[in-house]
Image (cartoon, rainbow, N blue to C red; front, side, top):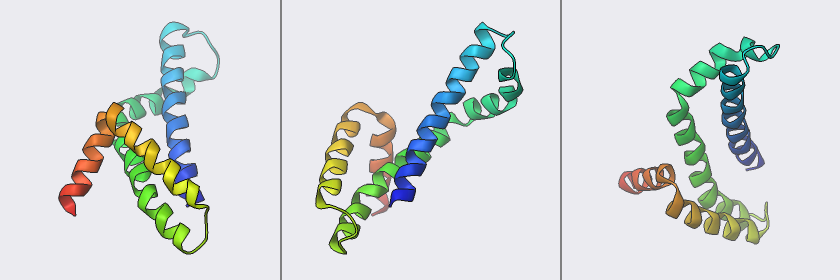
Length: 108
């Protein structure tokens, strides 16, 4: 479970870093080393929606997994409760999370 949580945060950090590099490349092209990442930043911006959907699928799948893991006493029960409440808040504010939850509901 820690691997999924870490990967979720790493994807979020990767997306934010690429946005920051894109800003630096556009506004300050003379900064050394950052223009070397131009192809990576371009590829990320082209696939940003798919990457965000992947991150949201991981977030949504962590919630039921946390309750299963809690059943086997591998994590504290508060983890599942906190993650469930965070998912409720994200459902109200993120269209990506709404789409992921609706697609999983349709599959079930």
